[in-house]
Length: 102
Image 1 (cartoon, one colour):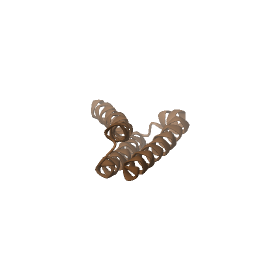
Image 2 (cartoon, rainbow, N blue to C red):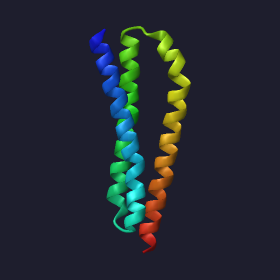
Image 3 (cartoon, helix red, strand yellow):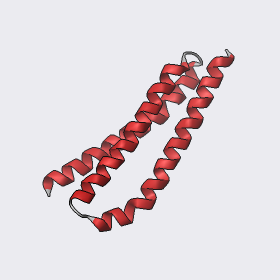
Image 4 (tube, rainbow, N blue to C red):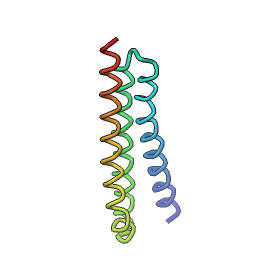
């Protein structure tokens, strides 16, 4: 049980850190106003790692058959994943368009 809790915590922290970095990088690219494409690529990669962390965390819960935790958090995780992808896309497109103008 301790290993499961440690894995769940690790995957959750990985997901939060990668998601925050995925949203921070396009903001940095917008502030720099040039060379936004590498920032956008890394940002979308981090967004993918964040979602992958959630998938692994769900798999950890399935392996220990913690159905109540899965049922309680499924809609929140779905909503947060959709918001993360939407925000990352919008910010990365804005950064790339702004860099192309200059």
